[in-house]
Image (cartoon, rainbow, N blue to C red; front, top):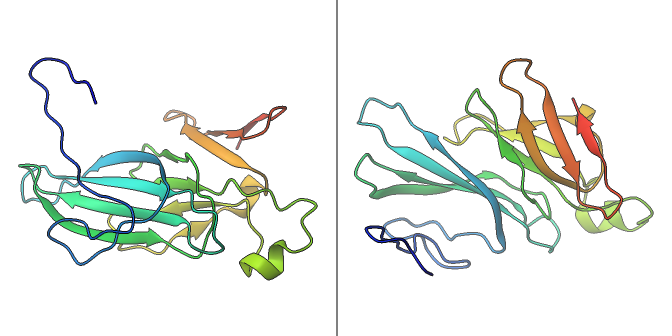
Length: 170
């Protein structure tokens, strides 16, 4: 890792290991992530959210690490489970995280049996972990990659992880 002068770095989480100062084991195959200000009255801390692009059935999802205003880790927890191959996703202007499954279930007759559900979905998650994830079925079933939200019109633009993939607007 090469950093500019004056910058520092530290490891905050390692796959399949406890996040320092917590009893939470960090997920495997970290992928897309974002940070969110907490605005919780205890100074301006933040939450880092990361998807798990795990290929094993039902082990994907997303996790979060909460920091205080001084950058100390105060908690780590899961915000989405029972999904698979959660790829890039994206933050929303209203402070939630869109977690996108990249799994292509089309033509895979074993998908429902292997994953216990249909895959290739989009879930809106709460970085604090207080609200249950919301499945957005209208965003389709395909190999979702990234999501970006137009803050004015509230349109969600999504990409598809395919060589001939499309750009979608919801």
